[in-house]
Image (cartoon, rainbow, N blue to C red; front, top):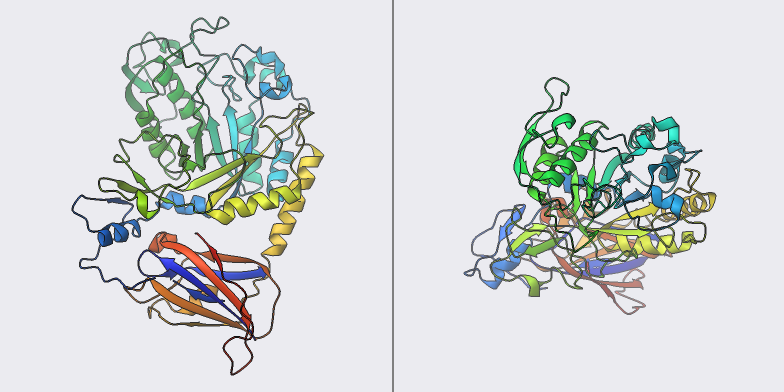
Length: 520
């Protein structure tokens, strides 16, 4: 018989959702602790100066994700698509002074893009609808700087529409990237002297969607929309009104949106423009309540690098120095974001999971000289992103024809085939599970039932418990998957320790390799 033991040290009661082995034992989780007053699970916990260390730990272990986060986290593998004027100029950043006529993909096939995403195992695609150069890839009503001024599709093209339709056809969810930075609208751009960005305009009562004909003269006038369509009133300056109207178009005309992606890039630090994030968030919540607001927003955070590498200890419960509705969501790049040392009185504990981004090319936009990462490299990134408690968003780059190049497609397919094959057969199935501590409603058998909404947990107050998985025959594996019941019990495991060995009947261990310990 093959026996293996996994030990996990938990904040409070041990809770393990599932364990699996893939051509890849005893499971355990520190000390007993009996809290004096139970603390309810919540999406927000506030650490008080009067909280004991035990109370602080319990609050940290009782922060739950919101429903839109739960659904988003279960996607695991998602895709970016960067495509625009930069593709045709073979640069990473535009200037905002590009002639829209540079955009002319003669063979663009959004179906081919979505097949590549599907073949790569992607469940969602986030389309860059407007990058920092400011060219809108849909015919926006609020600027002439869009694909409507390009020769593509004789000026009648709408890239967002084509991608949305193709994504729906292939069962892929849609997200939108709208750059807050806009070099075309920059007030110092000589090709657009009437630009809104940094024009020092006053905040005035504005109706969204705004009538384009009275955008500046009378922004309180609404654009005609379908009867019953939502309208919003905000006191905003010209640029925020412009941004809100573009966001409104994207969130009302292309079906369900799963993620809204905000970049933190600054086009020109010498020009001041204050983004009215609260208005943006408010409108998103009402128009697309299931969407994740990512980056400069409250639902998902950038992991802190563009190399596809998550932290070896990637906490999803993050202490904030201010309440979420007052926090400004800066980039978080410290090595430690959520350990016990960070749980200081006054903090607001918030579920704020990581997204790990990386381009398949060595750059975000296509250029002929940029090499593609290989399938082997992508597989390594998968284990260092999804395998380290984050969603993975992999960028693919259409070329100047408007097609994903064959080499990118081939590496995506092979990567997905290897990952799917690795996880196709759980070698732990057929084994028997024993625990030294167990809550009757959550028995050890739940860790192998394949249901993300069932789990094993130790008895109340136990922070050290042990599971032993015994297989009927020896197996060879090199991947172990351990998950926590975060939707029901938050994130609480501080570390795992696994021990493996052969155990004939009547003996404890015949061989005992060194323990393997990893942080969750």
